[in-house]
Image 1 (tube, rainbow, N blue to C red):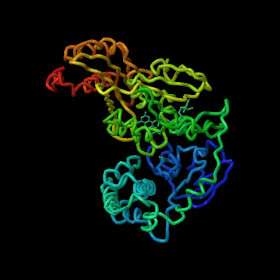
Image 2 (cartoon, rainbow, N blue to C red):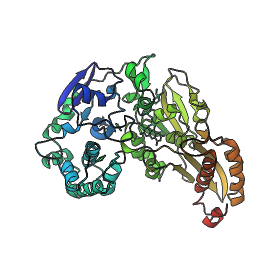
Image 3 (tube, rainbow, N blue to C red):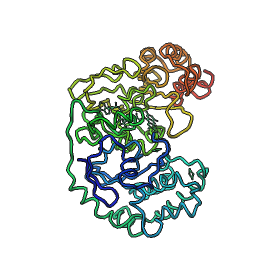
Image 4 (tube, helix red, strand yellow):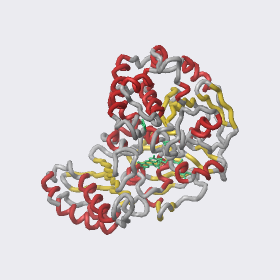
Amino acid sequence: MIEFILNNQSVQTNEPPGSTVLDFVRYHKRLTGTKIGCREGDCGACTILVGAFDNGKLVYRNMTSCLMPLINAHGKHIVTVEGINQSALTPVQQAMVDANGTQCGFCTIGFVMSLTGFVMNENHSTFNDAIKMIDGNICRCTGYKSIERAAQQLSEQISNKRSQQNLEWLIEHKYLPVYFLGIEERLKNIHSIFNKSETALNIGGGTDLNVQKHHLVKESSINNLFDDCSLKGISESNHKIILSASTTVSEFAESTIINNCFPKLEQHVKLVSSTPIRNMATIAGNLVNASPIGDMTVFLLALDADIIFNTGRQINLNDFYIGYKQMDKHENEIIHQIIFNKPNANSIFNFEKVCKRTHLDIASVNCACLLRLENDVIQNIHLSAGGVAPYPKYLKDTCQFLIGKILKAEVLIQANQIMQNEIAPISDARGTADYKRLLLRQLFLTHFSNAESLVESTLANI
Ligand SMILES: Cc1cc2nc3c(=O)[nH]c(=O)nc-3n(C[C@H](O)[C@H](O)[C@H](O)COP(=O)(O)OP(=O)(O)OC[C@H]3O[C@@H](n4cnc5c(N)ncnc54)[C@H](O)[C@@H]3O)c2cc1C
Ligand code: FES
Ligand code: FES
């Protein structure tokens, strides 16, 4: 039986584990404040807050309920707009009114929930943080400026919030109802329910499966990998970084270990989906999704990562993909860990992505590079690209050509020719094959734009 707290109500249900939280709250609990827009994680109308323990601490994140499998709610606090409503508007709701941040109102609940997630966050309190938190919410009416003003008003209001006793402050100032104080203790009384079955459908955050195979998910028995403790956590050992499979993209982005490896991590990760999707999307889900443009896959390919399965089998990520959506993976094999060498101090890592809009869009082409230069000689290089082949591509021939070469414009021109022979982009909604070839060339050159031996003017002439 699935057990969780919905707003202030303890819930036990035998509804299908693969049905969505959105359908449960609207159709079983008649909590119709949460809206249905796209049902594909794109619009944010269905945004809820999900409170779960993270290293023993209760942390709330905004998520899209249309993609969240009901089983993933087990042991958590699910908060819909009804769960924050009080006798008067909350300061978040009031800010939306004051700033004229709502017109038709369809998107408004989603914005209110994401902005409530912003004020609840202990680490983020600036206007920019508020804007980041609503990067998964779309409004077709307001033009966003009024919503931005509401976000500005809120960031000013919480500027004197104490990070200690955060919850008490939020309750005192009517952002949250008082029942929030008892949630942590109540959640501790819910026991985990992990039974893995060989025949059940493996699901991480559900952000791919619930878009592609919604009916299958609903009708299947489910292995909830998202909350499997053995698949959680990031560690470092003997100069290797070990990512557990169900690490979410947000956890990856927030990890001190990972940030120490990649100084521009925030810049890279903000190009991946949106905050609510990153809060749900797992790294293993990105690998097994096998999308030709999977961002985290391209990222990890350039790190020459290995995959370790629950069976103990270990393979290089580059050998994992064998065709369009085809992988060297037995049906019931579960990815347990992803391991890569910690980039050394002399290495430069870069990730580039071009898509039609900044957030919530998949790449036309993406490209990652790990480069080690010594006295302008390329000691080692790993390059990967998405959107240019039936699966995320490790650019093996280009790498082999570049190793040992002096980094100069002529070498890059030759490398580009080799790279163009390694790829086979197709024309589709994200661009023509020729456009993608041109994009990859430009992204490839961008990786070297900071190299001292290649002044910008030289690159511009290529
Ligand atoms: C609105 C939206 C925007 C998106 N934007 C991007 C984007 O910008 N870039 C991008 O790369 N992707 C994007 N995605 C795709 C998706 O979010 C990612 O691929 C995500 O990482 C999938 O992870 P998940 O845990 O949700 O996968 P799930 O849907 O849970 O699972 C996907 C597949 O992985 C399998 N699986 C999961 N975990 C394991 C495991 N441990 N072992 C074996 N198999 C496993 C499942 O069985 C399933 O076949 C977007 C999706 C949405 C809905
Ligand atoms: S309904 Fe659009 S994101 Fe869920
Ligand atoms: S107010 Fe209408 S969609 Fe935002």
